[in-house]
Amino acid sequence: MPFLDIKTATSHIVLRTQNLNIGYRDKTEETLIASAIDLELYEGELTAIIGINGVGKSTLLRSLSGVQEMLAGEVYINQNKLKDISPGELAQSISVVLTEQPVSRNLTVFELIALGRQPYTNWIGTLTQEDRQQINYALQLVGIEDLQHKKCYELSDGQLQKVLIGRALAQDTPLVVLDEPTTHLDIYHQAYVLKLLKNLTVKTKKSILFSTHEINLALQLCDKIILMEKGRVTIGTPTELVEKNMFAEMFPDDLIIFDRETRSFRINIENGES
Image (cartoon, rainbow, N blue to C red; front, side, top):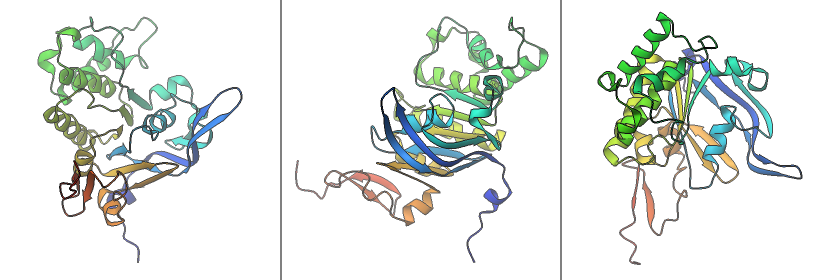
């Protein structure tokens, strides 16, 4: 009898793909990055996309969130085809945090987080009591109530990242997507941000998907891992992927090897070459 994941069996599917092909298309040709991708993201789960540089992590992330056009197949958000969802409906379904800096760092923290309410406000952006409640709740969730009146240019990289996560939370979508949220952060703040994301999935029941190079941290904190290799995408729990030895050939073993016992990558100090 197959193992039944109780959490998965009782959770709602927020995003699903069917035979998805991703890549780039211009007037004359297509460049295929990965094909036949079938995956499911559930509410209350933290999922990381990992892989070597240039394998297509950002391409997959942008295709799943509708920022970039897919080549073939389907993406479903709450059982609705992504291509049939209007921009307004999409903004109430997915919030996206990209690696680019905010348009204006002259905004206060409160003002930047308030931008997350744009899908719900009127054309002049008037905030209702409900909007302000959502903004204050987002400030509380990421622990920056004391920073709300500061200008964004006054913040450290770690503080600014929490503000951007807060903006996504204020948008109040079932799916939050982040492209390399730990870029420019030291190891402590990398761990802090990813632990924060994990805690947010528990508190809010949102599905959070992010791309990252911090593989060791992702293996410790994530419910699911999407492993991208050249032309292939595999999804599973960290334990499932470790047991299938999926990380053994991720990097050349002359320098880095995967230790299944500690479930982490380490330097191959036994190799005599320098």
